[in-house]
Amino acid sequence: MYRAVNEIDMGAELEKVLITKAEIDAKLLELAAEIDRDYAGKDLLIVGVLKGAVMVMADLARALSSRVTMDWMAVSSYGAGTKSSGVVRILKDLDTDIAGRDVLIVEDIIDSGLTLSWLISNLGSRGPASLEVCTLLRKPEAAKVEIDVKYTGFDIPNEFVVGYGLDYAEKYRNLPFVGTLAPHVYGG
Ligand code: IMP
Ligand code: MG
Image (cartoon, rainbow, N blue to C red):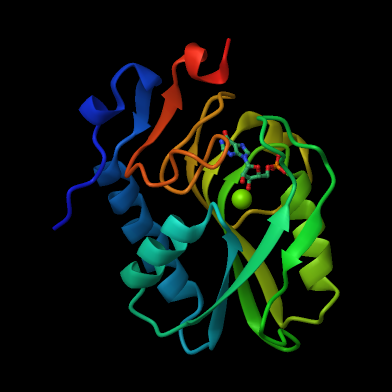
């Protein structure tokens, strides 16, 4: 269908592939079936968190058999580095009024959970009929925060990962798989 960046193209930059495109596709089909079932007869709004969730949104939305509407939010919590700052800013708000709506937040990854807990209270204060979370990836730290994540793709080790929407300094988002980078890429 398309010529995606592969492991060989990545050369010495790639340490390892953690989750293949085929594994992601299979998991999104499973999650989509659950979401279809849970929201049957409802008018679901899925909210993607830019930029990381672009790939998950695009593939999850196309795996759903129910018709949904899509909206986007952009928040910033990380700088160019790999540590969460805990400071969240809205860079782009929703175009949709979510009062009375069934809303599903779609995330790429939950690490410290700081971004998501902030987002849940922010969107929760707008009076949605329901508010749930779907994330492709979750790191162990996320288990320590009180966030009720309804749909989780993969629990992964506490490593910095890139690909499938996730970046390091804005690079590697277009890798079709999720992987880790060799230490020298971080200048280490
Ligand atoms: P949290 O607030 O620590 O849960 O992380 C929030 C955001 O940081 C995520 O939505 C990602 O955009 C980014 N992030 C967290 N962990 C990683 C990673 O391993 N690779 C790339 N981005 C990450
Ligand atoms: Mg994100």
